[in-house]
Image 1 (tube, rainbow, N blue to C red):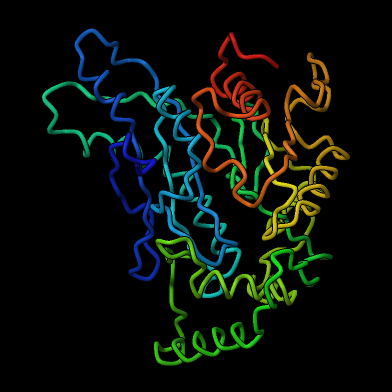
Image 2 (image 1 turned 90 degrees about the horizontal axis):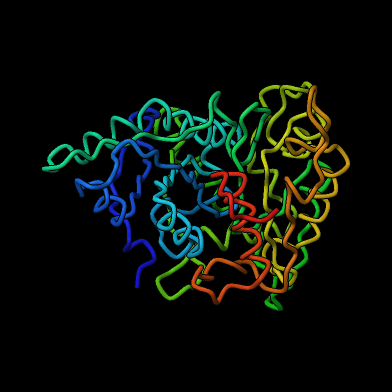
Amino acid sequence: MNRLDPFSITTHVFKTVEDHPIKIDVCVPKSTLEKRRSSSHATNAKCPIILRYHAGWLFGGQRDYPNWFAQWVCDLAVKHDAILVSADYRLLPEATCEEALDDIMDAYIWLSTGLSDALKSSYKDSPSDLSFLINLPIPPLRPLRNPNQSPNPEPYTPNSPTSPSAPHTGHNPTPNKSGTPPTPLTLITSLFTSISHSTALNNGKRPIVSNIPMVSPTGQFLERAIIATAAEQHGRTLDFFGPERDTRPGKRRVFPEDRIVDGRVLPPVVFIHGTEDSIAPVEGMDLFVELVRKHKAVAGMKEEEGGREREEGEVMRYCRVPGEHFVATDMKLDGSEPGWLRDSVEFLEANWLGVKSARL
């Protein structure tokens, strides 16, 4: 079964760049719609939001590829009548990393500026009142890859593991744990040549790509994923990023490590990473988590005026668990999930929804 089958999905354009629409999917649990169609259900109940950005090294991926939606996150959305929102963004190397981050931020802003109208227009023909009250943090919280301070932080979980690429590590080749021969470097140079040719034919305008498959229906890597793998293996990933707009402390944003050093603070967070990850080695996450600990870079870790300094376990969990890259993607919340995932979900529920029965 498609893990998105329990959802009613509508597609919207949240921004347009040079006539190229960048899309976002709004996934409402069908069970939530049924509840709101029932006259006995209070229509003023707020719907929490889960905002998801797809994986793919920033080089590829699709907002609507169901196999990369974590099953347990889908289960969590259905359980709590949460609206699951999944956004595309401009992809490297046609775009720069800064442009991708622009889209990631704009998708978050759209939750406040466009989601309500999108829901009204999508369900306006229903015979019943399907008005939604949306539970959003105010003021807006920066999105996943570049979190900022917020007095009302919402928890975040990177459920598709990545290893942060700091400036001092981004040009180091990634160890090839898969046992396969290294991917030829010529794949990278050929792509840059193709982009340059397309740009020249289009009066200097670079092509825009915001949705491209990384794997085949049978799970095999497609060209885009192979190129991303080659960039990692040969230490050329940063060649795709493009320039950073502002490298001053407090203004730089491309590398999460820089933002942590500059004083940015994560919301309550769960990191999940497989120790046998052959795509994004766990050592990268180890270094990032240690940096977060060093700077107490999670909301509540530092003593606030009139408050107390919270213990790490109250605001952050690091699940360093046996498994490959998509270690938790297929796990269900049906009682078969491992204890560490069950505890992580309870942590998220406590910080996200204030569920009284959740344990910290």
